[in-house]
Image (cartoon, rainbow, N blue to C red; front, top):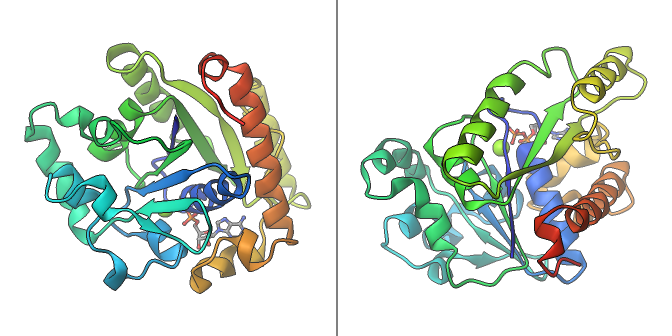
Amino acid sequence: MTVMTIANQKGGVGKTTTAINLATAMAAINKRVLLIDLDPQGNASTGLGISASERRGGVYQVITGEQTLSESVVSTSVPNLYVLPSTQDLSASEVELPHVDEGLYVLKKILNGHDFDFVIFDCPPSLGFLTINALIASQYILIPLQAEFFALEGMTQLLRTFRRIHNNYNPDLEILGIILTMYDSRNALAQHVEEEVRSYFPEHLFDSKIPRSTRVSEAPSHGLPVMVYDVKSHGSMAYIRLAKEILHKIRGMSHGHHSQVA
Ligand SMILES: Nc1ncnc2c1ncn2[C@@H]1O[C@H](COP(=O)(O)OP(=O)(O)O)[C@@H](O)[C@H]1O
Ligand SMILES: [Mg+2]
């Protein structure tokens, strides 16, 4: 089982969009995928067409022990893709979990005994307790960066958090990579940001960039991944390329040697 966290404490950088479409791309090649929506806003759940009334519960009910993971997980219109939705009450976890015994490990524990090929955590825009919990439960962190001014602002703090988790709680955690999102190649600033990210993090920047695309932004309002909404769009193609690049990279990384990925 490969577990990854999509994190960036900035909002609106493409975390949820990347989570939905990466999960869909993995499911499309017959992997059993679980997307865990850790944002109380529930954008990943809604974007996959899971209305609030269809949610029997969600992450909150599972971490409090009210429900089991199997009871809360819902299937989506994409075969092989399952979601553990979020509900508004999840925001309480940020204040409750620090008081729970072994509270840093609750997300790791709920995955025990489950056998998805991929688990993807979509994080809220903060480095709070839920994001930290996800990082402790994961082998990889994936960082979307919006190709705009101030893109790198916050990276120092994010990387410091990564190192702290790696050193104190989860030595298995590795940086899978950085993805440039909402990229507009005609924009000189976007190219500048790309060069800057490449110069600071040459080994982490993915070759695949996600272009800014209306189809990508329209898809969630239809409750569909862009890959289902319009598979031929540039955005879909970009996410398919990114998924391939990620699978290839995982095979070459330390955990990849031991797991049966792709
Ligand atoms: N490649 C893209 N092209 C156009 N719009 C995008 C793209 N990626 C994301 N968006 C839009 O930008 C907004 C923020 O994206 P989202 O994935 O929700 O970010 P986050 O989860 O980091 O807050 C959403 O309205 C989304 O539809
Ligand atoms: Mg989001």
